[in-house]
Image 1 (tube, rainbow over the protein chains, first blue to last red):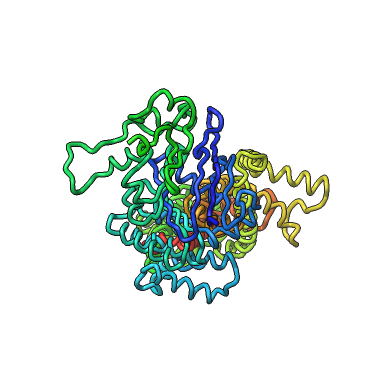
Image 2 (cartoon, chains in turn cyan, orange; image 1 turned 45 degrees about the vertical axis):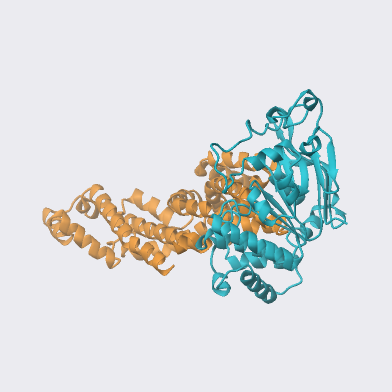
Length: 323
Length: 305
């Protein structure tokens, strides 16, 4: 049984033109111990998907439809108290900006201890010891000294390590990482990804890695879902996606990654931008930007084509299928 | 932290020197002291004697120097109404003023912060409209008018509380409410704004993602970050608070520094007025110092920079 199963998730926000969907019928699943990359441009709905899974969508936004099953329980039907028991203990989240995601008035140690104290079952002393051990585990060299530091006294890389420590200190089964390396230097990025990979193996947890960076996906993910305009448009193992993308959007994304070994006049880009929620074309949302689009693409949202057991694409004419 | 305190303490003597200068100027502007001290039938000889005794024949700078010396010794001259030195008379009244101000401030801060938090959490809902509406109304209401209304209702009509004076706790109620209402609206509105600014911060989301409930989120994560603007405002308002206290004391015949000051102004008892101004100034300086230290205690970014 999958650890996390998302079916037809739809998250909407009110706007002047009525409610618009930031996530429109997203379905995907995540097995225990699996690392799933969720890739897409800004505005594709990947962050909103992440917050929806934690049921932390900022009001007035709300989850309008779908189901989220986590460890066999339907999260969307849990009451808030039950949901709170899962957050930080069974499922955790880390964010892009480690400085703004840590509270400036509490020490690093206090913040790493907090999830344990909130969920109970430990004394302050045990929480303190475990927090210290966790800080050391995420690679903070002098954890005992850093314990009493405040976030603004640490470097960006250290802050993200602290964030990882507080997210994982209760050993959750699922970590949702929302662009955890996008704000960091490239060298630090690699270290943080390696750390996440190590911790994932050690703790046997699953990671939902949300990123716009295919390099990050290649580095860490087992499988990847490509998101476009609130929908999952392709799902495949990482190697398959990089070798033979089936959705024209995935193919476009891959082409626009600069290749170190190759000299090119100009990096190919996908022309146009993601349509704004509320201005979705009637058919395939990618059709206006798609080099292969024709009349069939503008009629209705394309059905999901299963290409192989573990490869599917929401396209009328997936690329692999016609040569 | 210690450096921070020391640098703050350094500004205290400078502030007090400026207060002394202003007090000195006021003292000289209020007319010839000789005219105030002596009655209309005094002889020229008596006048000259007093002029020499008060050093009024010296250059102004020397007079200011002598005045500073007296201030440092706590000597503000003899009170005309009470006969003795002015400072002890003022200090004797200080307790009553501090009691009133402390009670009013506690009420205003506690209700203001709670009201501000509730209004922010219920933004654009009924509770927010009710609280913010009352705050705006309260802000536009002069405290002397409110004081008189309160006396009418609770003292004259309902006869629940005494109209004025001191005694038991019941005497403290109306002046406290009047003075607190003077500051409460601002505390509500500032807390509301500060909480609204903080509540969308990412670290608040982090707290929720850890599994924190609303109470923990608000009290442990939002409030410590939102309280600093409230404290800054508190520091800025201590002056207004002392001013409000003067009016309130006068309305309720509260035997504090404020009512003494008003009475002494009418009696042209200049030594008492100057001594009272000094005491109030020192109180404001100390209050600001305390606010400063509180702020750096709450926010590590202030004390560590």
